Image (tube, rainbow, N blue to C red; front, side, top):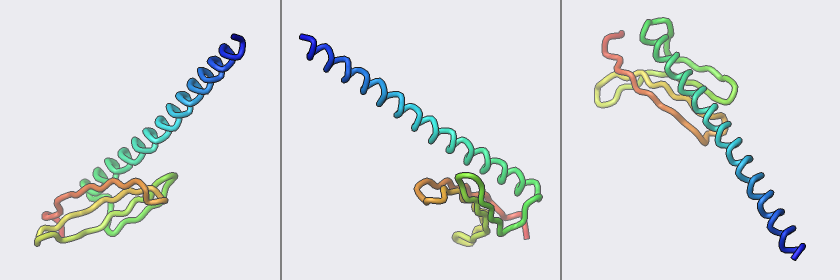
Length: 101
């Protein structure tokens, strides 16, 4: 009987520890995603108000930002790309760039 109780307690403790570690990992990923989205919005704002020239490149903590011009089907776009240094996560934003030289 004591063995059964001890086994159940060990299983419950390991389940709780696993759930806590999973939550911490998920929260860390969410914070990194929010940071990258905020940086993307900041770059969009700077470029929209002509305070940023292209091509643009910046490395930060946990991300690499790159911005460049590209024509797609004759339509000019400014492309913002943020990615993790490992390359496992990437965000892209396309901005119409027809009003600029």
